[in-house]
Length: 176
Image (cartoon, rainbow, N blue to C red; front, side):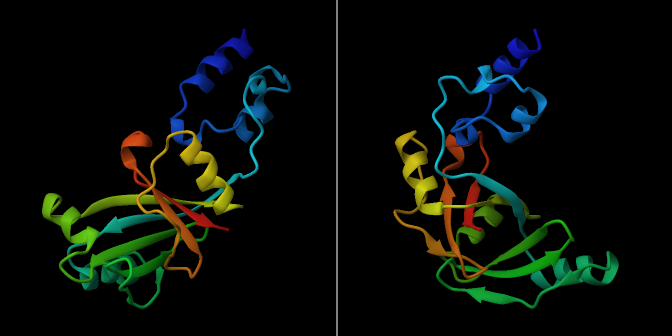
């Protein structure tokens, strides 16, 4: 019975993470039934690296996290190749990435036009092999927002997955 319930839960997972048996499900059930028919993956999802928040006023947002909430924050860094300024808020187990537009063609400028107060923009999850992940996900008809990985805010290769293929969430994969 429990294996049947877990099978149903597994088939309901998003296309974005259905590439392999969930490690969490493996710890719940010692049965190999859940992994039958699911090919082994040459790459693995890692930890949540950060949650990105688009902000209309970077100084005000930085002050909120630093001065009001007492968080450690980085300096403001321009990333012209991504069209954004970033500030990272350290939370111990993960980070928040504050994003503000850099230039008129910034994807964050478009986001803020639709969401005047700002809001959650994307989540970033580490992967152990970004090249293998991209090949595998493209083979599974998950679209990427660029042809090749680009260097992200942490100086590592990143790739964004299309939100329409990830249950409405913009997912950034970052090489661990």
